[in-house]
Length: 192
Image (cartoon, rainbow, N blue to C red; front, side, top):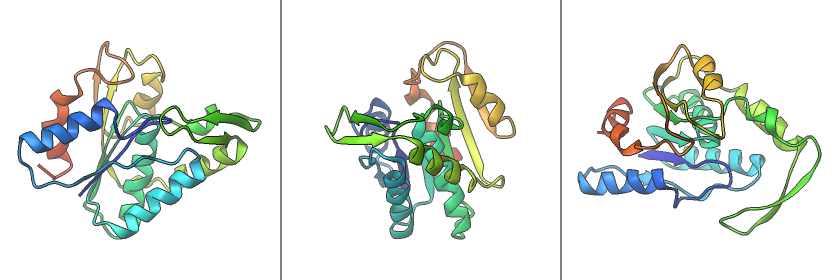
């Protein structure tokens, strides 16, 4: 079972999730993909991830942007739960996202769900606590495109320099041509 965690203020209708689901269906893989709408606040998102990990037999994780950060957290939690075979694929992942959380409470509206919520220092703290649970023993595949207009790919390249990594020149934050990497990514995750 594969858990896909979408990015900040995104949805399960993101292009990468749709491409993944289409690939699984086309290849008739016996793989269940869980890609739920993630809550808006960081505490709620961490709680939702913890709940899925405790209730479902997740064996692999994939995520993009802030979902990449949470995928690193999720696979670390899986290892802590004894599922040490679990791996994760991070696509243009956010690195130390607590650094760009607002320092004062900020009211926001989720563009997909319409939910009104607040983002602020408490969210930054949750992200810091989640990062403290990252385990160095987890195996990750990090996919980066240098043309990412939202996140500086060099931060992820440095942060994850000990992990398997593919850096493509050009592209953008959505990771153009993601479907090209699905066979290798799913093989890396031991679900293909």
